[in-house]
Amino acid sequence: MPAFRIVPCLDVRAGRVVKGVNFVNLRDLGDPVEHGRYYRDEGADELVFLDITATVEGRDTLRRVVAAVAEVLDIPFTVGGGVRRVEDAAALLAAGADKVAVNTAAVADPALLTRLAERFGSQCVVLAVDARRCASLGWEVVTHGGRTSTGRDALAWIAEGTARGAGEVLLTSMDRDGTGAGFDVELLAAARGATGVPLIASGGGETAEHFAAAAAAGADAGLAATIFHERRVGIGTLKQQLAALGVAVRQEGT
Image (cartoon, rainbow, N blue to C red; front, side, top):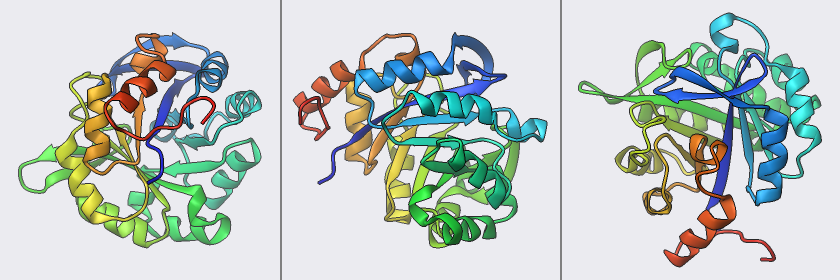
């Protein structure tokens, strides 16, 4: 079984790392290059960079900042935010990204996923899904950084998006984001049943037990931001705790 991956996330606005709760009340948490270097040295398996206001502001991702972060990394690097065209993805990959994440633009134009996969390969295409619990659907897809309801069933969208060419899913529970209440394991288990591609759990993870629960629910990786940015737990320590809980992880020297 592949090792469960630990993935820090840099939510970036105006070139600075920020974090809030449920995508609002954002606080400045520092320089993305410094964070990238720290996570590389800490043993992160991958790094995700999300330009969280690019779509809302109708602009391209901060390529200069992406390139600066990529320069200090030797781990896989996923970048999202503002990717609306194949050319946008090409520019980010040229700037040093290994994978591109698409969310709002893919909902508006699902064929974008196929065009990206045909140009760069499915392994480069990450379908980012922000999901919120909804009485009528179970979980509804929301876009524009959680600002816009779509009326689209999140599980059906995951199945469609991966069938169209996305090689990985980054699934964020909007209800859990920034709360520290643990990943939405019910959502993760349902998503695991909807697709066979690698699944990254996001939203609410704070303890080793939370990450272990995500792995048990079918996630291949756990993504978090605040606990790592504020240095509440080191990635090496988290991996040791997960190994003690029986979760296979990649540790230094293994």
